[in-house]
Amino acid sequence: MFSMIAMLCRLFFFTGSVSDGSSYPKPLSPEEEARCLALARQGDADAKEKLIRHNMRLVAHIVKKYSGAAETDDMISVGSIGLIKAINTYEPGHGTRLATYTARCVENEILMLIRAGKKHKNNLSLSDPVGTDKDGNELTLMDLLFEKEDKVFGGVERSLMQEKFLSKVQSTLTEREAEIICMRYALTGGVPMAQREVAAKLKISRSYVSRLEKKALEKLRSALNRDDFFE
Image (tube, rainbow, N blue to C red; front, side):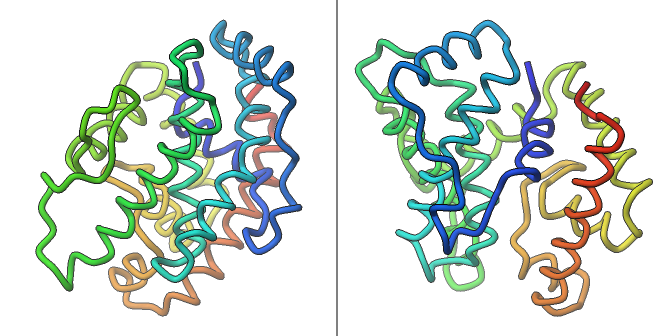
């Protein structure tokens, strides 16, 4: 099963601009969605990638709903993580459509980002509720943080993928670019950082962080395609 890092790598290849929802592939038909879900449960990575790619339009739609609450790029990043979680954990037959379940997971991630962004204005408790899981149980920020960390770094296979990808990041990017990518996507632990948080930590402007991140992702796209990283 692909790790979170592997899925994030693949997302680099097909995430588009949130300002133009038409840049994303259209949703799958119910029949094709059911077929891909069945294959994904059997470990078919291509089917899982297809489900993610064709649900990015939903992520863009939800991000627009929260426009102004946080940086758009940051919400797309964490919304994509929520989408991956949804595809990995969705179970048909429980009376909830994939789109509905996915929307909840994406919103959970975005709400977590928004709440975290307010930590300097208000006292944020890790026990604050930020949503519910598929069974209706209340989820706290603490639950989501640990769930994310477990999914990214749990297991030998994930550790190997992490090591392999980090090696590619370090060999492809400059030291500053690698530092930004690691902080933005939590590649060395913790949780993904917003661009403004990275900027504050590195004492540079947020716009400069954004430019370096985009340049770094372009380099990684080229390097990963050239080296058949996922073969």
